[in-house]
Image (cartoon, rainbow, N blue to C red; front, side, top):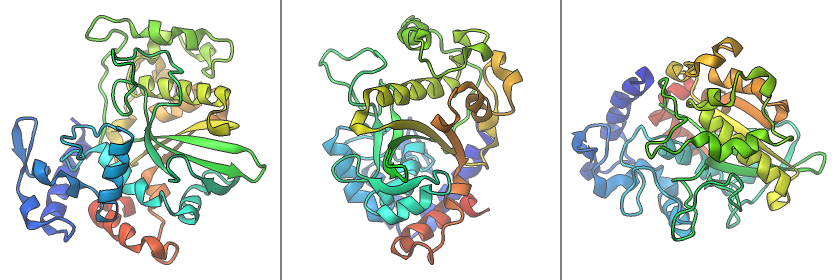
Length: 328
């Protein structure tokens, strides 16, 4: 169990009791996985897990594109206040119609960023992106449809911008909050499927972006979070090759709290000699350094102020009140 998760539960419980963004009816313990928990909202009030300024628009966007809310019921978000997807949406969705603010947020890490471009429905940010095609060759359900946010490799969020050199760049975002991972080998699914066979063709391809000379074998990547990194990097690479949305470059951005020390555990025994954290190791394994970047949430958002972004004053106050570690 993540120590950071355990420290966040009482913080989120206290926020639920004190914040004017939560109604009195929603301050009761919420049912989550057969138990009533103080850090969860009652299911009928799960939408209050979202920042008030985006509740209606975020729910509508997810419904329109049939994006699955993790642990969500009846078209609502998860009622767990430490949910990573909810955290991602709370931080990023308010920027979906704020091109200057979003550019200001990202430019310190992408200095060639000139201006933002819409990715879906005119919005500058979208979620659970799986690509225009089944690039990875993952199994499709009987109805022939791929689902965003479930059963397919999905990037938590996506943004796009034009650079100063006139190239168009897509950034797929992998967002972490309280996650931690053990040493479970994911080579075989519960069904018995050998997952290496699904992705072997991408690993074996001559243009594979992974430095095989540093890997003892392909199996070494089938431990979280390396398994996620691998699939998302494959997705980004295939999107770039296909020039999805006319993009010249598609890269992966990993965002996680520096406070979550549990996430730094290196879960794949064969990779421990390559670095001190999963993100450091993955940065070494990706051939082209500009195709993967990792930043901590505190560095991305912690320096933002009302003076810089007056149009997002209420959001910044909300984030700093609910996710207090962002400023610590």
